[in-house]
Image (cartoon, rainbow, N blue to C red; front, side, top):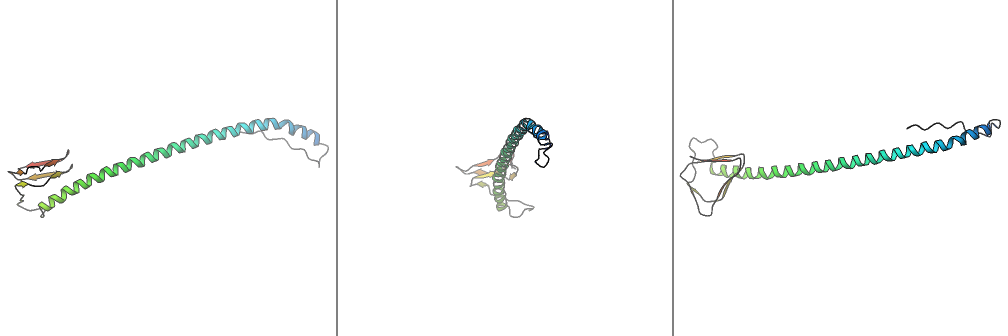
Length: 144
């Protein structure tokens, strides 16, 4: 947005042009004031837009961080559950590659097979009263 340049101002050092320049300078001031006010309003409007954009961006960033934190927490819980299942499997089968695997024939503690894991047992099996085996969605328990 352009502001019209003011004419040469009057000066006492040049008395011959003082009145003419003074009249021209004073006549230009109302236009200058109008153009300056329009420019100020434009700057204020753009400042408001920039502020709103910055606030909206910050809200989006905050929401993204909150979603990322929630996703990280969910992943952490799932990893903890899987780690617990894996620890139980290792405790029951300390040798990871035996030719003969043995398992007890009675389930005596609550057990969860976490999503993303497969489990295998040789039967017949008995599950003690009050004891449960939970097979989460996405997990498999095969009894041979």
